[in-house]
Image (cartoon, rainbow, N blue to C red; front, side, top):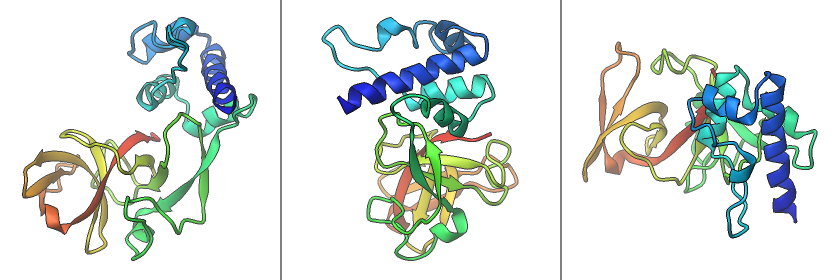
Length: 210
């Protein structure tokens, strides 16, 4: 029953987001560059009765299309039974401290939190970007939502922690059995190549504030 309530609350909030910006759910999907039926009510439950949830990517694209944020969307959720949830937020500098993350790359020592919609993604956290190596995509002070433990592939934006304690946000480049390439979107920074045995963990960035 709790899943039913969260499911309804999430979709109601998405409908409210569309209405707030003078759109139908189909119009919001088109504005986000998605198939027009992505947010249709007929797509919210499968033919065998299973609940279907909007993906984090589709939700992020919808929010970007209307210039909204996850924090604002969580406010819409608060009007329903789900209300969103709080997740840890950490800064890059503190993230390098020993013992701050568990073996899967999830922070265990974060005191601060931010609000995040209950999208069905487990164990996500927020990371505040510092520095300019990810400009122009991510700027100093931007917040990215990170999912540890998920599969990553070439071209993904990722957060990488080395065994030496360095934490950095990059684009994942070529990956071999021995090493990986980490690409800075700022051309002033060269491509880095790290041996796999130097890496503690890699986590995928699933959304970023802009």
